[in-house]
Image 1 (cartoon, each protein chain N blue to C red):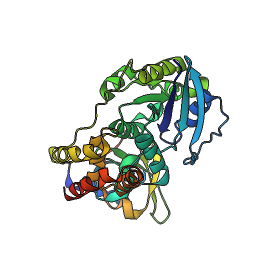
Image 2 (cartoon, chains in turn red, purple; image 1 turned 90 degrees about the vertical axis):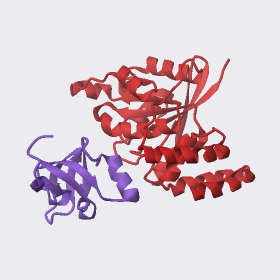
Image 3 (cartoon, rainbow over the protein chains, first blue to last red; image 1 turned 60 degrees about the horizontal axis):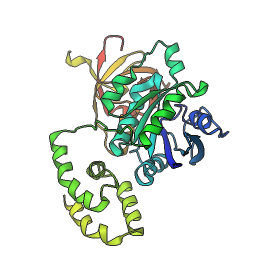
Image 4 (cartoon, each protein chain N blue to C red; image 1 turned 60 degrees about the vertical axis):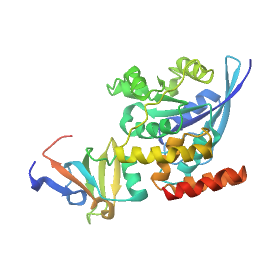
Length: 242
Length: 84
């Protein structure tokens, strides 16, 4: 059966996200080598095994928490639009920095594939990456590619296909925090769950509330006021008191 | 490690390597610095200093980031004799 799936592309600036986007969709979206270039969200499609994939090129960010417009756009898309897969594009030559964003995203959703790009650059510098170890540690599929030369695309297409058709499932190894924080998360989670009904990770929202993320709270309010007003109001009071 | 090796990032000289121990900043700036790699335990190199000593460019997880004194004076670390 033909289906359509939405795939969001996330990643740090300069990881080749737009190059990958263009290679996959055949679109001539402009790619450049400066930060913050992708300000609006670009869209394109590709077809694989009769399924259509709608690709969303999110703004490149180092994080989803610093509250710049770019980060809000990317965060809101991943959390509220709930793409079938969020493809986190990371730079093979700078994994440590890039995995920061990857960890943030696997806290938000289990439907993640980590796509290690610029493998050609890494090989030139003598960097070898064991994607199987990373897959095990992160709990989500990790695929190595070189977007420029389309190397690794077959496996990438296949991994996306298997994730959207539930042949494989992401089971992210989320970060465990200090007991004090974990206790507070446990307290908040049930309240959050009554509001979001498991559509969004209650643990993640609890964490953001503990961090005092007002922009997320406002976004939640806005979205629920638009929909079912009565669901949110009685719960918010509990949330504020904890 | 002797007490003398502890310093704030704005006190470091060009070419020195500092292993970070504390980030005494709050809120969005703290988050931003953490996202850029200014994490306790990370080793930072002083790449260059402006003529007046502010801002200072640091090499952190393979990227150069310039910080004003406002921020660098709130980041503490241990001076490493040499090398990352």
